Length: 178
Image 1: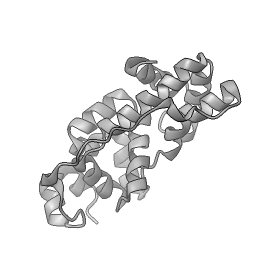
Image 2: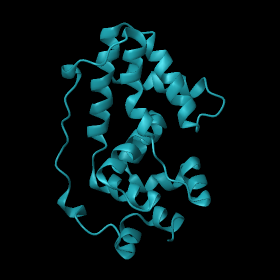
Image 3: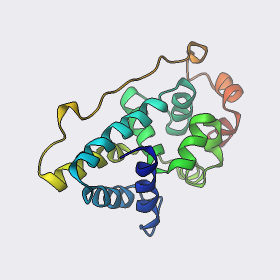
């Protein structure tokens, strides 16, 4: 499975659920769809998933996650990026390129109004669960490698600094004033 096939899997899962913003439904559908693939393709999907996690491992996105979720630990950032992957390729790529663009995503606007966090921890388990469903076994230990890039030192500041966040992420800061 390659990057394009993985994104098609997510798109199909979102299309086949009655509410594509229902993370649990998308995860269930994506897991079932992936489980129908040969075991070696399922294993390959794990590397694709972790490559996307690495591609989205940036300080500006971490700052955006901090604004959206009212704080963001290491694990919280993983779960936020899982949520972002679950939103599909277009939202993912636009947001990785410009984290402030999250302010224009309808589900983000709705979560801001409702005070809800954006957390996609279960998205990170799609491949694992599909492999268990298909084979009855855990993923092999060597199924993937994680290659996180160095974080941008220009974004090494206190994410609780509202003035700095408003300067760097003005649309998100306006959407989440407190």
